[in-house]
Length: 420
Image: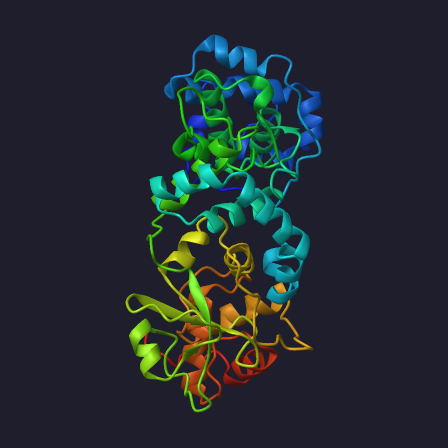
């Protein structure tokens, strides 16, 4: 569904090193999109020139010239690649709606069938990496519906086109070079199929993630995340382990809050939550150690979860609470557990992306928020909302970005209330 993106950036000047001929199209390569439509530039041969400008980067990563030329020979620009960020449903619709579409009876049944089919391999992978088999299967199910939706795009072409079309996004040039390194290491050219953004195979790894995390279940040679389920599951396990997964610790647990809970804090150790009479919603006991964050995805009127450190590891796969919680709850169902026990609000009104931006702007102006203003409510935004609610005397201070919170922020104006 959503690829694992490499976080590093590359120097844009290095990308364009040696591309003097590109000056024929525009004096300033950074302003190419403004001066000439990309499709027109491609018709003028700009794409071919741009590809050659990437050779120094590929050479620096150990790619041979013959490998580079074979990859770019006849490569044409793909005008269907998006010029801007695509909509992300995991951020723009209520979590319970995303959850209902992700954790379906059909997917649960498919996952359990896969668990039975690969039981021996899953047990071996769990011993090797310490990640429970249901989590491995749930990640596979969330990413590609157990291999049904891996994408059929030529990722070499897609990444090259994205790097050319979106010259403010050096990530795609970096991933294009990583794909060439894969070819250099023996991955067949015809295997490089995936999504428009370059995510490949069962785990939906970008090339850089493949190079770092893809492993063979057994034997030697290039890991096969396209047709080998054991290689795919082992690669997912490797990624999660290296992202910090702690064996023996659940991702979290649904809980019931006492009626008199004052929402003084959203962060405590599990024993401290238990001391406040916060109880599991089901049969699973609260862990005896470790820190936990209280997460109320629909506010105090909906389900409540205590999230462990392992929950944030799941977010390394996709930095969305809708995605991570859906993956975690799918894993619970594959392990034989039930669904969410508390009811979701019947008429939840979710703020728009524009309104969320405004909330973050106002929280920033008042000294509560110091993160990125992106219209996405993650833990930093929730903590800032909680602090504002406490400061303004709003109850419950559940950290939920509601219309009431936005109204209160507007009424408070932009006068700083919290020490910077």
